[in-house]
Length: 273
Image (tube, rainbow, N blue to C red; front, top):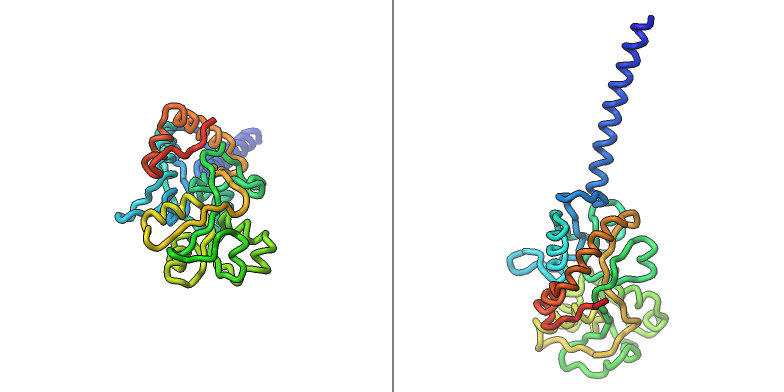
């Protein structure tokens, strides 16, 4: 009887170990997927809108490039971790981060109180204004109030959209607000006369202007509050947030961030502590 009990206990132990190993493997995979693991070699998956120049976009060779891409590559290199850039539906960015399909959002993302409720942020690394862009030669649009009766475009899930949606002026005075999957599409409609103005990130708009100097003008007036860019992490991923912040601080201190800014903007426009 005692022998049978021992056999039964041993069998139960083997089964328990197998189950535990299986659960542990799943947990380990989940940890690796969420990016909360801290070991060197863990992949960091960066979620981005790949049509958001100059922060992150596809070049003529279909390679993802940009200011934030260069920052992320250097930061992950210093962390000794592989990086993967994953294009996502930007309007679903919080769900992508929460699910662990991406580990960070690093793509000209404005830090807002609303977003802080669901995400951890790095320290801000760049200021960003929302301004008005018009077709070259257009007159009559000089500030926000002059958009009354006009058709205005912006990007879905952007800071500009958040401001517009909360504004009584845009709800009652503006003729139409068209929302696009990306700012490039909005600018193309502006060039073709389908809308009267675009409200969007100054950095993105001015980069587009530099590539289309004969078709787009900027109205140099801020719309809504001035915001700041930051890198977003899942709420439960404090370790990765702190690891990335540490190397970013080092990159600022040794001049690497300034050099990357000069490459993309012609000067250093990043924030210093």
